[in-house]
Amino acid sequence: MPDPKLDAEQAPLAEGMLDLHRRSLLAGIGAMAGASLFGTRATAQQAASGLDKRSQSAEAMAGKPMVFDKALRGNFDLATPLGNYLATMKMTNNLVGARTYIPMMGRIYLAPQGKPAKELHGLLGMWTWQLMQPDPKQFPNLPPHTVLQRASYTGIMTDPNTFEPVKSVYNHVLDKQVEPQDSLFAESYLFYANGTGSSIDRPQFMTTGYGDTAGLRNPLVNWGEQLSLYLAGLFQNTGPNQPRMDSSIWSAPRRQIMNSNLSLVPCDYNFTSLMRAWERPWNGHQKGDDTQMIFNVKGTKLHSVEAIPDLVKRHLVEKYPERL
Image (cartoon, rainbow, N blue to C red; front, top):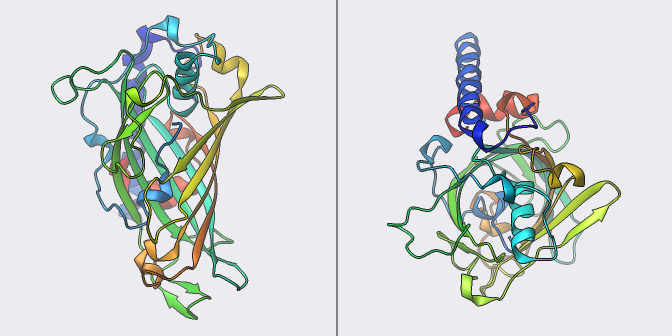
C-alpha cells in the first residue's frame, strides 16, 4: 500500500515508485505470458456504450502532473465551493500528482419493458486517472486551481457468477448468444475550483462552464467515521438514448481525507447506471429498442499497482498491461 504520509516534496518520488511498480508488474506479466489490465462526471460504462470508441494507453497521458500546495490538501471547509472541490479531488484522485487506479467488478442486467429483468454478464474494469496542469497554450485564461483529468478505461466482460472472462453471453431478451467486446477508451475533462466541469470530448455529457454557476457543492455526507461523496452523471441531451444517467458513491475515513499529511487515501467506490441496451451494439439490440441495461459496480480507488485485486490483475492487467 502507498505511504500515507506522502507530501508535495515527496510527490515526484512517489510517481517514480509507481513507475517502478508498473515496470516490475509488467515484467512479471511478460513472464506469465511466455509460460502460458463532478457535480457531473463521466464514468466507466458511459463511453464503453459505443458512443465513444477513442482508445489510448494510460502511458500516453503526457504533461505535468497537478500538485496542490500542502495548505490546500486537508482541513477542507466543505461548506465552500473550493473546500468541497478539493475534498472531491482528494477522494476521487489525489492532490499530489500521483497516478490513480480504480479497479472494479460488476454485474450488468437487461431490463426489457413489461418483462422480467435478468443478469446479462459480469465485468472486470479499471479506470486509470491522472490529474494534470492544463497547458496554457491549449487552455488559455483558466481560473486558479483548474485541473485537466486524463481518464483511460479498460473493461472485459465476464460470467456474472464466477467473474471469469467469457467468449459469449446469453441474451435472454433476444434468445441468442452474443459475443462481447472489450471496452477500451480514453477521455479528458476540465474541472474548476467552483465545482463545475467540462467534458473535452463529449459536451452532451458535461456542458457546465466555469461561469455557469456561482459554485457547485457535491453532497458530502458524514456516515459514522466515514465521509461519503455522491456524484451524478446526468446526460443533458434529448433523444432515444434517454433516460441516461449514473450515480457513484465514494467513501473513506473522514479523518484521513481531512489530514493534509495523508495524501494517498484509498476510497471505496460504488456505481450504478441506466442506459439503453442498443448503445452497446454487440448486445444485438437495434436502435429504438427500449430494453434497458442496469450496471451495479463495486470498486476501490488505489494508488499502487500492487494493491490492485488479483482478479483484475490476472484477467485485465495481464491482457492490457500498457493501460496502467
